Length: 162
Image (cartoon, rainbow, N blue to C red; front, top):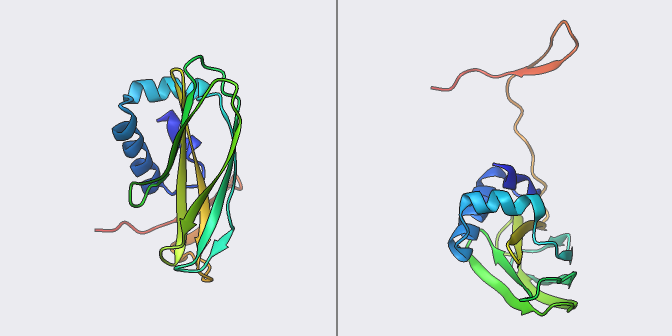
């Protein structure tokens, strides 16, 4: 689905959850989401979040919102896709710009994502912000064998899993 890449920083399962939450929260259909992605909401969202938090520590997500051009204004919502909790929700009037601060908490060690949904007119956009919680860096488990094809392409060969 074309809308998945607008959730650039989330892993695949979090993208699916974010998309499901978007559909449930807004009533948009998958076809209208695909249409909205071509245009997006048209709003400008500049998000600044702490790069790291400790578990239990709080930080601030700062959003600079602008470019509200629709006659009926626009809406913005910040969600935690892991819990579905709405951390911030508001409407902006046409021509309004706003800077908001949203308190966020590091819940458990690992990556934590915050989804920012904007809607304006018939368009919608979602962007994810990643925050590293804790000091441990993820380590990928290496599997398979690296082989190079005659054309020079690197391929990792993995055994089939039952």
